Image 1 (cartoon, rainbow, N blue to C red):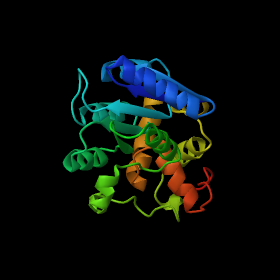
Image 2 (image 1 turned 90 degrees about the vertical axis):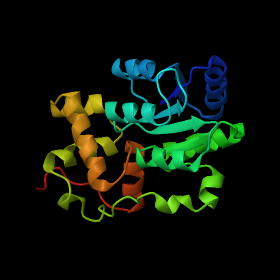
Image 3 (image 1 turned 30 degrees about the vertical axis):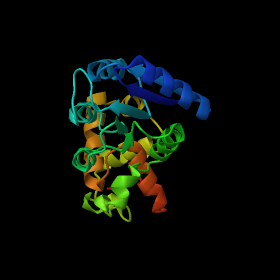
Image 4 (image 1 turned 180 degrees about the horizontal axis):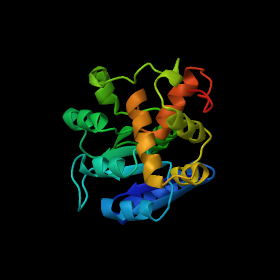
Length: 220
């Protein structure tokens, strides 16, 4: 089951996106939250999500504030911003803060479906106007560390990464490794920093594209 969390304070937006996405994707469940605080409460109640669609303007957050708070809570969550404002400075700031996409509210419904599909596969979705403006070149590219991951990850990080690549959530990894979930989040954050990515799906996608084998937890 793929779970998407839509954070928007307008019920019509949440309901419309829920109907659209659940109709377009088999096995998808769409949840809703009105504020970033509500989203954090949802995530804090042991709910695992595959993607968060976050409105830029909310009662308790503006610009990239909500993105920063959600990434701080769990850096492995993929978060895409949704906004009627496609200002290039805002998009650049969002990407630098770890956003996995930026979707204009003016986009056609099929564009939203396409964007969600790309992000779930570990890609980044950005407005055409931003790409045509050549702005993507200003965003730092992931580090080329996948050829020899054993040289850049600790033994414990390799344990976490191997289980992450098998699709396990932080809570499941914590249980298997007999560690706290906060410790797992710290390891995941360190893995992202070492590799140069910002979400679980993006990290796994890049690793698989390189055709490398999973790092062995038995190597030191």
